[in-house]
Image (tube, rainbow, N blue to C red; front, side, top):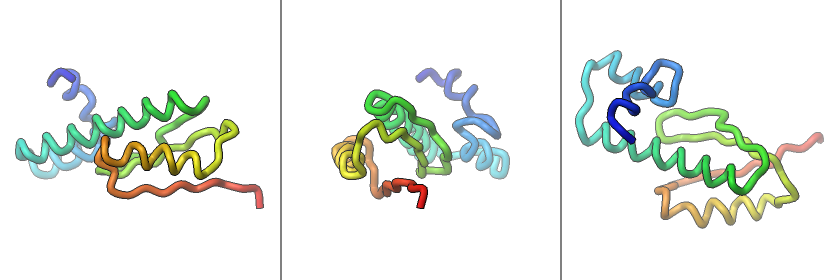
Length: 106
């Protein structure tokens, strides 16, 4: 990702809203913190792309700091299948914790 492209994403309501808020309050950020932020954003994007390849509908519902909330269609998949997918991604994308919830009508 080019720096100019990254800069266009750092907006109050866009992907970089957490970084935008930090920069608005503090006016600067360390290179280390910027690189960590880029790493988290890229990992989140890769996970979203991966899930889009596995489910017919995937949406990013929330994203704050290093926390992402995705909503996926069931597509004949069990909760165990989703846990397995995330376990396979843990090391590659530095996932420290996750949860899977299946909504019901009850």
